[in-house]
Amino acid sequence: MTVSRRALLGTALALPFVRVAAAQDAAPAPILFVHGNGDHAALWMTTLWRFETNGWPRDRMMAVSLPDPVARADDAVAQANRSSSAEQTERVAAAAAELRRRTGAGRVALVGNSRGGYPIRDLVSRPEGAAGVSHVVTCGTPNHGVYDWEWNAGSEFNGRAPFLRRLNGGASEVVEGPRFLTIRSDNDLYAQADGRYVGRPGTPTGVTQEGPALRGATNLLIPGLDHRETAYSARAFREIFRHVAGREPGTLGVAPEERPVLSGLVTGVEGGAATNRPVAGATVEVHLLDADGARQGEAIHRATTGADGAWGSVTMPARGDLPVEIVLAVPGHPIAHFFRPAFPRSTEVLHLRPPAPLTEAERGAAGVVRMTRPRGYFSWPRDVVLLDGAEPTERREGVASIASVSRGLPAGRLGGTVRGVFNEDGIVGRVPPVAENRVGVLELTW
View 1 (cartoon, rainbow, N blue to C red):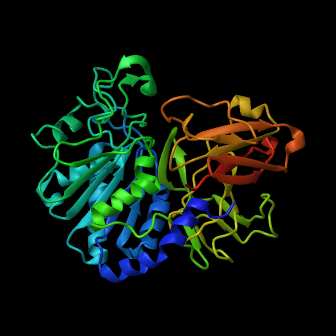
View 2: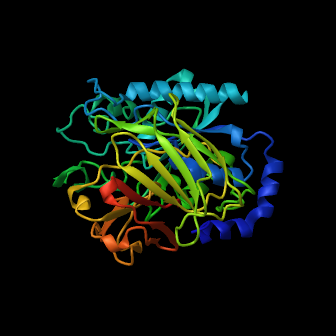
View 3: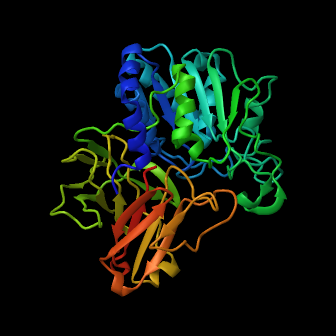
């Protein structure tokens, strides 16, 4: 319910190295982090913390939230609240230019997860783009497509569609100048030979676990990681850091700050697609919790978002050891009670989205609690996943492919404590009433 044991252990063992790293690197390379399909900048929060702990200045990093993060069904056909490959490239190019301007650096490093690797590769495929980039890291990016077949012929994710054919058409799939690293895994649902994970079980996809690799790059296979862990795990951080910094990080952990300051945006869902466009009129409350998920007094922060979607800024009253409950109410959506472990460090990317609508099965319960893992998936039998003392019904053997599990609870549990377990990590919350269109969300950090 506080900082995970893994994070604290890494910090305790390696803080002396952090001071050395900070002294060695007077002006380390600026880094732009690009999220994947449907995601936002908040997923890079722990990566930013790890870089900061290893001496990287906060103002030399930027995690971008692209306005319409979901790809079009057909890259060439306009679709409301979805983006084309060209639009994503333009936005990443603008963010890289802004980071260069802000830091005065001539070149920046670009790091992308999943779809986020596409605009990076597209940008550096142009001579003027490559000239401003020092390093490229693609993490779980389906560089040869999620599939290579006759269906979905215009999809950005189809290896035989124009976008990827152009990027992969040369003798080398990288360009001169930037240093390229790809990180991939054997447990990535978007690099599988069978179409099970893209809606066509039993149909060959035409791609394999080699799909994220690039001819001419340094290609690294890390067994066991899931699609998101290829970017957001401590193991992936080590490789990203080594590639950009040219040395080992002093620690894989996160050093706590005395009084973390939290801020971010509320974004929404339009036409069934997640967007990173700001939502006005949303209300946000932040409560401190005890070890059983009970509130400690009144809310320490209340805000209603304006046109920019910003929900304000809150300074935590103690050093990274107090769990929080964030209540988000967005008109037209269930009210979410996000239960989060303690925040060890400050962040400006604590972005919030309304939860998915309650399902018919969930509406049949008095209370519903979901456990989510934004920076990874649950994988069986790799992981221990327990919600309220039992394995979730959503359990799937094999390749990691789900990031959220849920449990309906009877009326006698309303307002009571519910616990979630993910391997060594634990998280607690309370059970809100479905009758008030409320859902509890136990959101894991690591």
